[in-house]
Amino acid sequence: MTLLLQAGGDLFTNGFFMIAMLAVLVFTMIIPQRRRSKQQKAFMSELKKGQRVVTASGILGIIDKVEDQIVTLNVGNKTYIQVTKNAISKELTDAIYPAKTEG
Image (tube, rainbow, N blue to C red; front, top):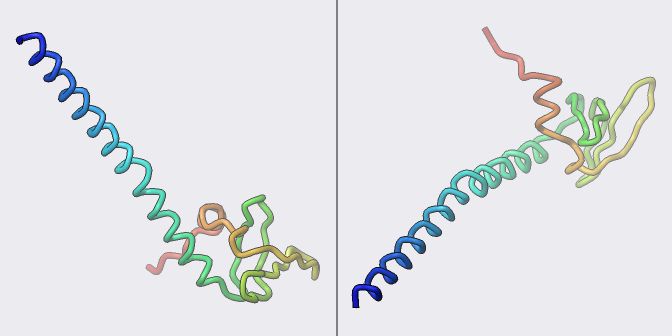
């Protein structure tokens, strides 16, 4: 009888440990990823002409035109390329062209 109770206690402890690990995984990986995804979608919806951006492949340019999901970038000397909105990286844009602070 003590053997059954001891085995049952171990099963409960292991199950609790697995649930705790799952909770840690959710709070450290899944929730921050959702937050970044929402920020990226907001950034893409606010793209406008004249804004300096960086594509995910590292191309620097100034937005010349925004049409639905296509963005035309001026990459220098009247050279234009078209990329999709999701190719523009918020992280790199913020790193290379930091937001101007008023002060």
